[in-house]
Image (tube, rainbow, N blue to C red; front, top):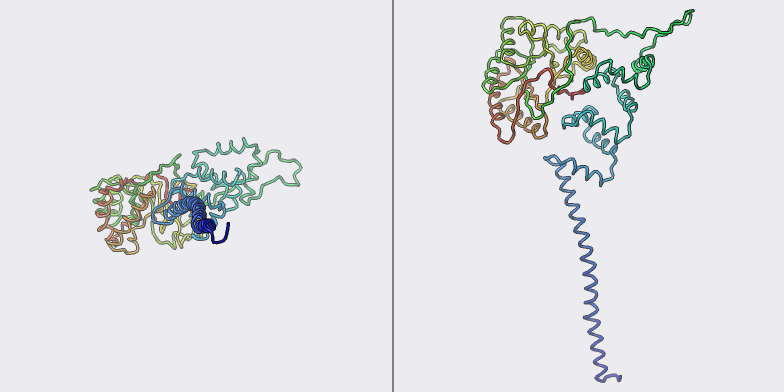
Length: 437
């Protein structure tokens, strides 16, 4: 092929076309295949991220996420259960009691909580016991919880330990060791050894006080979720009649934790409370915190005085009570545990609250109205119970003014079907701390 000939130019033209058209076309095709394949993977990854972000936004937003969504995110993260709990405690400063309360109010039973702990951490019964013991839970408290939850008797608990292979001496020694009690042993100078020594007797320092102040706790408790318990402290007062009027108007039963006085007017008002079908419980006799919480003996004396006046006026030997200031306050820190242990031993149940009306702080009508309705609605959506703290005291006139308006909204609510009830002897307590928290 000669340079400059017709054949030369034909070859030249074909070469140019190949370089400027066919090669880019082929490259474009290859690029398109790679691009769209990568785009598909990118789209799938993006969709997954969007789904996870959506789940996360639900979890951290106003609406609660589902357990499944959280677990899905948690599994993909590779975070350990220990790290998760540490992070929760780090950010929220949650105590073990607070964490227990969250789980319990979410409707998770004690049995489920223990099952999760044991399953996730491969904890055996003895190891779980050691965890509880090392965290300040005494054998007595632990046995009480087991008995209350399982309706077990002392004999049944003994049978469990005996069936596990423990002798009587081993059971006593183990309990004594955990509680710092020295086991009694025969004198080394005795010529005749005692083959069957008497077990050490641990005297309760409060057992001799008011021996008749003792009730039998129910074998099981009733927990009514989405239920509102209206409670009134500090009465009866000049407002009692008006409170009873509004409750009767809407056929609602409530609970009054009273501070009785030994006079005819107070006795008539307490009887009116009981005659109307409401529950009545002890709040205190004096309501003087420094006196009531000066010692366990002082608390028992105050409680006994108040309970006897309630009985004289109404014929009711009440089994429920509310601590002045709640079970956790600045005045009872030094004696709180001992009082709770002694009152529980005697079969009494104490009730705190989950909704504060703020009337004790002098809140006005608007503040009380908005706060109570908001908190009750929030609890309902979470399937929590609402134990509403209000006060039946002469100076709490705003409580009377707002009561009917609050009840009217709750009774006529179309979005939420509220139930009302009084606190009965077998109502599962709402407590700031403890097995019923």
